[in-house]
Length: 257
Image 1 (cartoon, rainbow, N blue to C red):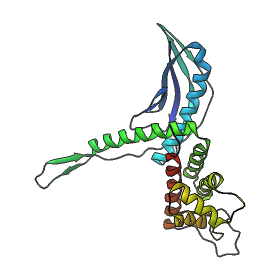
Image 2: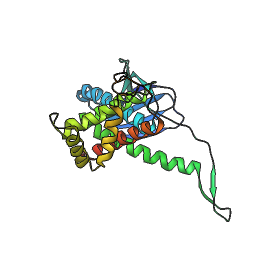
Image 3: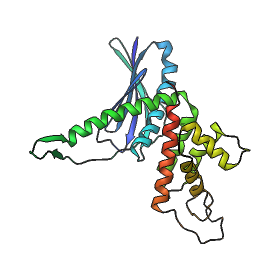
Image 4: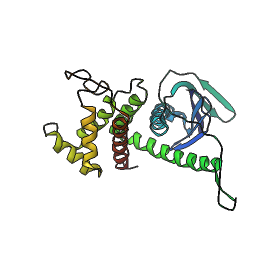
């Protein structure tokens, strides 16, 4: 069996290391590199190259969703190790998105002055939980094109400097495509989505209503109304983000891995 390592360049660099298991690959994102490692025969190589690319981009979508900031990856090639021989191959370019945020160190003490927890301990727990989430999400993405669509829409929203809400409505439209007929009235469609995903129907209505508000310059129909026009306020944006994320999370739970 050969050992394979597939590599991508990350920009900007990460300040924390992410280790994620997405069988048959073990992924490590560290500094300015993302690497996927696995074993296989030479006959498996074309499939491994293809699958590694899919897993890397699934991870990138998950990073963007879980961490909330734009990131780019560029495929740089792979190594094949067979016994004492290592062959290196340069490959083509791909782009994706990931997120990272920094934290400062701190301590939490009880009334007696004993350390209850520290930011380092908390970060370690959060890092472990994040790696588990990313692994599960990437495995679900590999099985379901609709989930990939939802996460692609979220990635476009995250990377849009104008904060347009159209991409969040696109997430709702994926759910409509899955659970409701296009000929049905909007209220009926939203009710079916809420029932299928075990969500509050009013939340679905809120997302649909705000994103379709013709007075919003960052909605789906900017400038369509005679005016006056405005930008969605912070509460409206937060509600749209919350409901769109809930749709993604609820739908992801339905994907069996």
